[in-house]
Image (tube, rainbow, N blue to C red; front, side):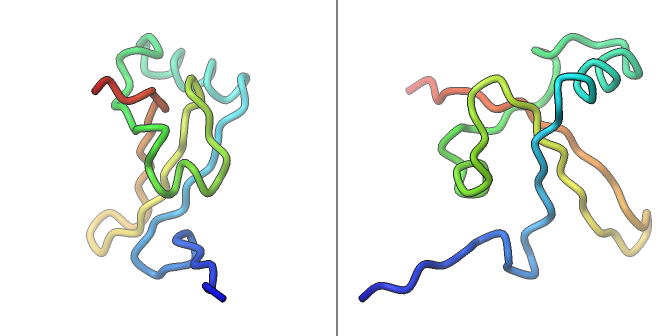
Length: 82
């Protein structure tokens, strides 16, 4: 029997969250950008799959930094174009 591994529990994997539509609107308004200007993340990304992200979702990634403390990154979930 194969044991299931949860990648999101690994110490080196930062926290990923799916933003609500209101949070997305606030983010885009705050930075005065369109959703397509966000950096992309594949729907096939291991973490995106594990948290149930779908194409069109925006992920908030919370990273710990020795110099900046906590920093936030945002990614738009996209379908791979192979």
